[in-house]
Length: 406
Ligand code: ASP
Ligand code: MG
Image (cartoon, rainbow, N blue to C red; front, side):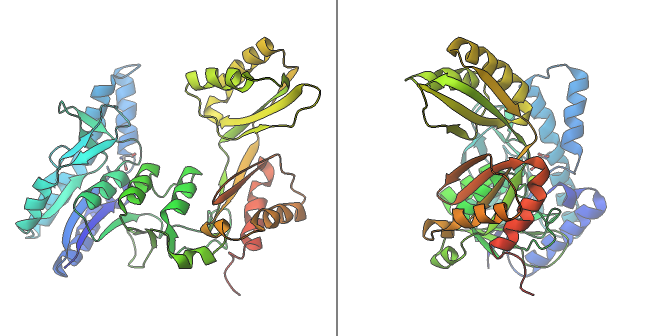
């Protein structure tokens, strides 16, 4: 008998008909003898419409009350599923975040789970219940309801799986797994059978939206095996697990493309100690997350400094940079918004050479100019012009042997 945590996303619980389908799946697993904890998202679109209601109520909705409001989306689906299961003659019990013992810090809207007291769920399971838990929420030490950030039900599920030492955390979603790249861009994208936490984390950070980043961090820290799979088919999806030696033979496992960054270059800034601090401190104070930073080699006591920021912060970052540039006596500032960051990700990079060369050659073969390069142990990213993004992804997919064998 296995203990399984199953999480169903918003499209899988979009209406009563869909929740009935979820009940079918849950019922089937239960009939096989498995113990089940089911974590649910709100019906798709509900969190967005609650946010828009809040904005109608107040220009700047109070954060505590906003969390109290948003948590109702998941309360609805959890209660409905438990109701359906009970009407079919099953023992089931719904739990809100606080009833499931999910204890978070006080950061409204993006709270972190501190610990989970799994007692209530455990005793419900011991009594033969299917436990249905409202995802995306918890409570702080004062009992105030908190939410875990958009997509947070993934993290609820992984955290519960970890606290109950579940055999697997199944994330049921509207895609059938994690793909080598975005299938909408590249028709030869393939489902990956098994991927490491580390690679998944890089992919999630770079915009592969299947899993909330925090859920992957959590799973990695506590070694929770995740199975990302379709809520609409029986097919096996992608296992996200600890790295194993066989994984290193795959040099590149995925390619991502992020169009959400913009570039700023400060030309001819004095090459002196403390200059970078003067540029990046005001950006940090404005809570702008700088991604890539590249400083050119010195020439004549001056250097060029280039960095990228999220597009949403571009205008503010530009304003700040103009001020800083003026104070530093930098000669000019150049900006570019129409850029894309294409990245190749793979554990095998740790032990294989030549990955960067292959990437650059592939891009060169299509005459795509690389503007910036950055790397981590298992990732190489290049900034290119946005209009070449799709071509770059397809070219790299082929160059790294990810296309299906013919
Ligand atoms: N309902 C929340 C959202 O839309 C949380 C989730 O679905 O995971 O972001
Ligand atoms: Mg999601």
